[in-house]
Length: 263
Image (cartoon, rainbow, N blue to C red; front, side, top):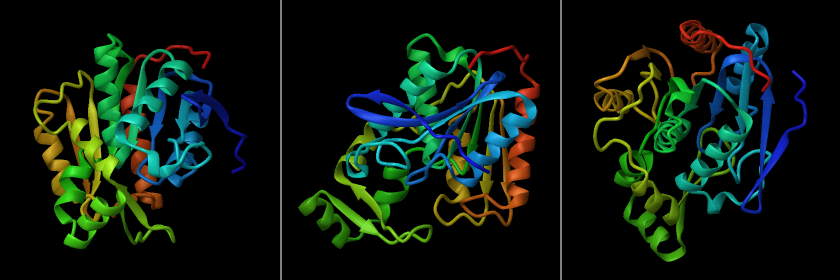
C-alpha cells in the first residue's frame, strides 16, 4: 500500500517521524522493536485494520530509526521512552490500546508507568504485547556477552553482533546497557490496571517464551492472557500471525466503549 508522508515532532533538536489516522476510540498506538521502523508488516497491518474498523491509529519511529532524525548510537530506553511519551500525549486523546512489539513491549510498560505518574494512567485501555522484551539488555543481552564483547564495550563504548534480520549488525552501546538498568520493570508487581494480552512464539530464538512467562509472573493482579504460538518465531509476521493479532486487537477494542475522536 502507498504510504502518506510522515509528520514530524521536533523534540530536543531531533525530528521524530510519525503517522496518525483519525478515527474512533479506543485508538491503537504502535510501539516498534529495536532497529525496527513504523513501516514494518505488523504496523502496516494494524493501519489497515484501523482503517477497516474505523479506529484511530498512531505510530512513530524512535530516533535513529526509520524516518526519524538522530543517531542510533545515541539511543537509550529513556530517550526512546521520552519520545514515545511526547508523541502519545500530543497526537492521541482518550483511551488507547498500546501494541508493543519486542522492545516496544518494554517501552509500553514504561510508558504506562510514566502516564500513571502523571495521573493519566486511565488513558491506557489495554496492552497487546508481541514477543515482549522488557529488561532485554540486562536479562537477555548482558548474560550472553563474551569476554571479547565486554572488552569492546569497555574500550570503544559499544559492541556489534550479526543480525539475521538485516545486513547491518546489531549494536549495543554501553549507554544503552547502563540506561536499561534504570528502566528495569521485572523487579516487582507491575500494576497496569488494564487488560494485557501477550502473543509469543515458542520458536522465538531472540526472546524465548520463558521470558514472556517471567513477565506474566510480574502481572499477578491484572487481567492477563498469554497466547503461545507453537511454531511462531520472533517476528510473528506470517499471515496466520497477523490474523491472530487482528483478532486480539478486535477483541480488546470491542470490550471498550467506543467514543468519537478527532485524532
